[in-house]
Image 1: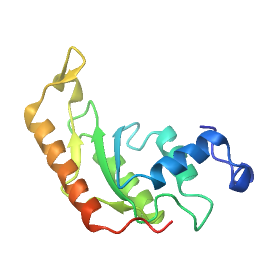
Image 2 (image 1 turned 180 degrees about the horizontal axis):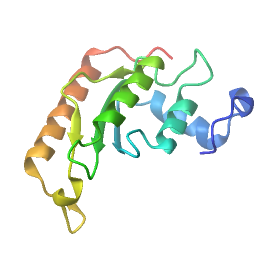
Image 3 (image 1 turned 120 degrees about the horizontal axis):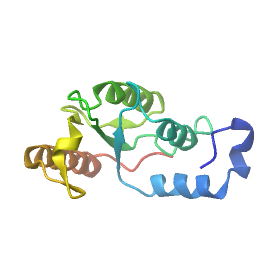
Image 4 (image 1 turned 60 degrees about the horizontal axis):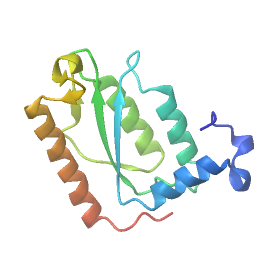
Length: 144
C-alpha cells in the first residue's frame, strides 16, 4: 500500500486500499501479529490502520473486534507496541479484545527450524484467539 495521503483517498482510493478495506468489512474480527520496533508499532502497520480508518466517519474497523499479539527479542514481548496499538484502535473505534494481552518475549529462543515451539506461549495465544471468536459471536456486525 502507498503511504497514506488524504488527498489520494475517498472515491479515488488505490485499488489495493479498496480491497484491503473490503476484506476488513467482510471479516468478523481481526488478528494483528506485530513486532515491536524502537518501543513502538511498525510504521507499515500504522499506515495500514490509517488507510483502514479513513475517510473520517467511514472506518472499516468501526466496531470490529481486534486481537493484538506482539513479539520481541526482548523479554518484554512488545508491551509498549501493544499500548500504542490499543490507543490507536480505540481512536478509530475498533474494539480491542480485553486483557490479558498476548506478548511473547525472547522470541528467538521460541523458534526452531522456522517453527514456533514454545507450547505455553502457543496455548496462551490460542486462548486469546478463543476470546476473539467469543467476542465475534456476541457482537453485531460492524456498522460501517
